[in-house]
Image (cartoon, rainbow, N blue to C red; front, side):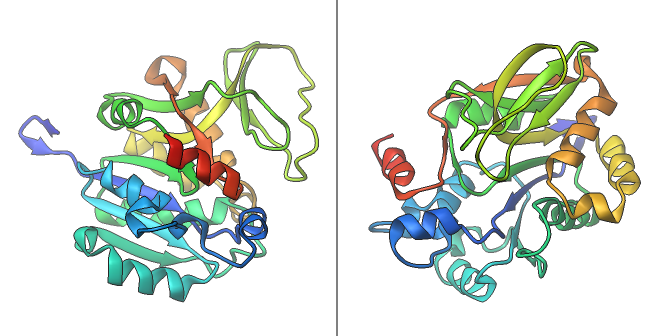
Length: 255
């Protein structure tokens, strides 16, 4: 995209550092979930996401679990994207929460001079047309999906009585609890767009070290509450799958 004659630098952050315990257990062996496939790596979640992100200048991929294998596979089989891929290792993938992977990704994104940043968790599948709406939006974007909100699978987002966005999920996959009145609740699409780079940098710098050891939702929630509801779009992703098990992956193949 061009703004006043200057091309906007667009960066996609993909976090794939997790150990994929539930997915590996369903497959019957340890695997890197984002690279799993039946016939070709072109069927893997990571390849599909990169293929659908043609307009981005850089792909920042944050790995951790089996990082050497991740790098070797990408270098050997993702050559189509090699000039745009920036690989980063999260050495604390097994002890910190998802927030630290996002921290590393944002840090690298700011180094590239990114004007717009899209952040997607690496175990997702969603409708391509809806994703293109996210990528081309002028405003920042929060995504949701139409799947049922289930405590063992979902990250839920709701709007409190002040109209501010809040996220909830249960790491134990047991139950979700909201202790306040709210106006609306959705199943999160786990893809976000940060279009205001100055606010992104400000929120990044004001988030302390301990918070980065927690969930990536801490930064996400702070960013969208800072810019205000009129500065972002709510976009629904169709055919959305959070790939936690082999059954989920097989559902994606049907799509």
